[in-house]
Length: 370
Image 1 (spheres, helix red, strand yellow):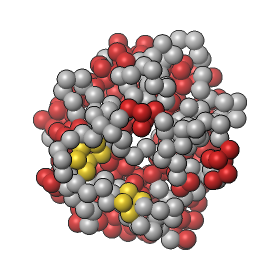
Image 2 (cartoon, rainbow, N blue to C red):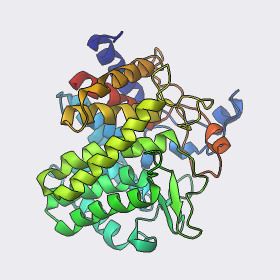
Image 3 (cartoon, rainbow, N blue to C red):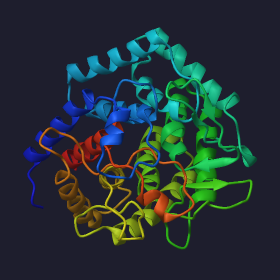
Image 4 (tube, rainbow, N blue to C red):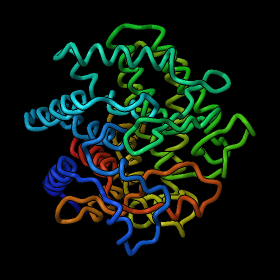
């Protein structure tokens, strides 16, 4: 290990400060980029102020610090963020706009508005969110800059849904003692594994389409796999003893299988390639950070043995090397719809993103706890 805990702490705080002040990229920014990887660019995906999934992941990373440190400035930032968004009106509900709800759950006892909103949103997931065959959560996303419309992605399951939506439903199930919500969260985890997990490699596909019964391009996308790696330990921790032993063991076994393969695919720099099994694709930091956070938390929880510590420490080194002096996390790919070939993922624009900052915070925070 070539880094000190003090270096990790200092860089973590820089990344957090940048996250809290992250501004939206403009169309001019996009056009002036020397990098021609502009696929999937959406101004909504950048910055910290808008209510959508990148910002929701960003809030989650910031809030995780409060589990171990009493930082009133972070708590105030989160409360102000929610109050400002509630005042101006929320976007249409979909899978991705559910992401900010995960952090809101920790404030529902402080403000009745928050609790009412969280309960209504959880009920909407149960009754209002479109479903695929076999009653999967259809990956409905925002359709415009302002969240006034949706893209249905009919009959499609995406791995992103586990983090964006299922973690929230599971947490609300525990808080509100709702057995039906808990069972639904479990079922969604199992259903997504059924159609997205590849038993030959131990990795996850980005999505599944019931219409033509394919995994689209059959690509193992780094950040897609990472959503599973980072979600499972949190799902297990939140569920606790309420999770059936058989379901817990199934999730742990699948998690271990995936991480075994990920360790083999780690680059010499400690990171993972945006197409995991193709080393000619670039190393992507947000997915690498989420994988690292999941591995470190898995070690801390005892579901991974300490033989994975070298892998995680090497990854932390790679992540630290991708943090600029101002705290910007570099080499983060923009929001990524499902593609039909590897080129699609390799050509996504690289730009500072709230989730890149946040997932890096998760990884560094776990590094300080292990």
